Image (cartoon, rainbow, N blue to C red; front, top):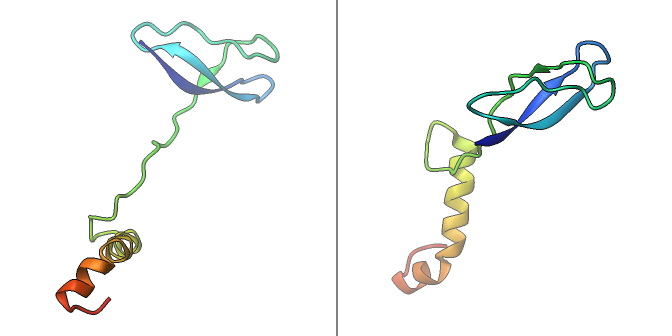
Length: 81
């Protein structure tokens, strides 16, 4: 199984992405100078869905989005929108 990883060449400082084998990674060479490169540890890619109140800005955005989506239901119930 392959996945996309970030690498940095120690000689020319080129930062690039490459597909590598997850179970048995082969050495990845820099596309510019062909020198073996080092894998970078990068942060994960995620987004907050807004249901966790520990992140108030995301929670407020979630509440506003759902309030706007349910305006017609709130009006039918006689609640303020």
